Length: 120
Image 1 (cartoon, rainbow, N blue to C red):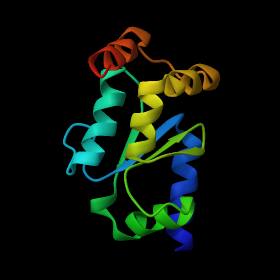
Image 2 (image 1 turned 135 degrees about the vertical axis):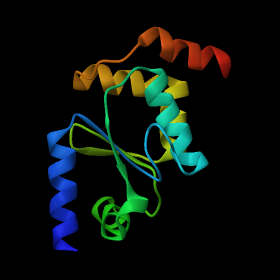
Image 3 (image 1 turned 90 degrees about the vertical axis):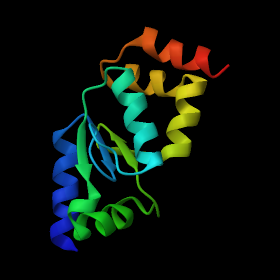
Image 4 (image 1 turned 120 degrees about the vertical axis):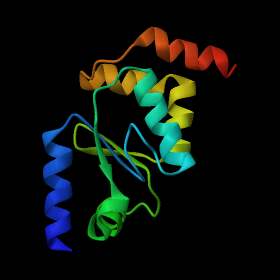
């Protein structure tokens, strides 16, 4: 577990935005991962994707690391933000925009607004 924890810490500290997910940003392997990756992709966010299906130690390790039982998991500037439901809610409320702006993460504000308009 220590090795997985070390790899997770190094990944979340080395990248401004990290998504631990089932599959990859180009080919998600579950609906929840697809939803979060879709939001980030649509908003033009640069992020590292980590496929938990490729490594059982990371799959369990990220759950232990965050004390959050499910995947996907989004990290911004080394901090755990949440899973699919939380990211969806934050996107629709504008909180994700605020977090990105406060953290200095580039994103397409117009695309974020389009997501909210489509879900209004």
